[in-house]
Figure 1 (cartoon, one colour):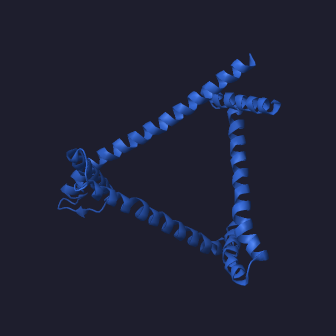
Figure 2: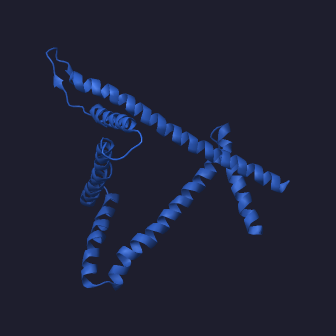
Figure 3: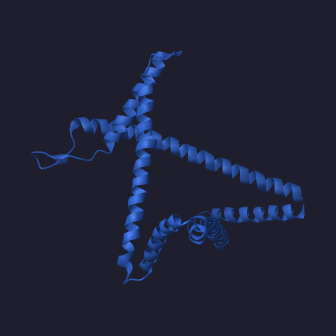
Length: 222
């Protein structure tokens, strides 16, 4: 019970220190910030050691088969080359693992965007126009499909930047693309507004929770 009380008081004090930012940046708030960064850094370091370095590097080298040891030497060599970025003279050698990391990351991001977002978005949009499925309100479903298709196409048009030079030497997109981009800008604004509302609601919920926590602690103490 005493341990719970101690941690409750720690949380109470840290919450008050965070709220001190309402009066401007101050050493107390910075203390909590440094503490949070230190805890996160320690947590990430521990996860890296026990879930990446030990099972994927140390254990295969010490107790793995011959093929596992050979395969493990590749990331070990790349990691060693990456450390050369610490030296200005040898930094050029570290470009190889950096290029590998950049290419692999780009491939993962692009592949995930295509297979996880674009293809699913196309499939979901097409599915809305499938009126053969039994539905209570086919007209409403068709309207939803039209809005979804319009939003997807016009939003993509907004990010289409290729243009041609006209007779007056101005560089502009075609009128159709400009009109579609204007509509897409509306959909983007609505999306960003909805995201902001969601973030604001989450932050407000966290604030209410912390204020309630302070109230409960004060009631329990006094």
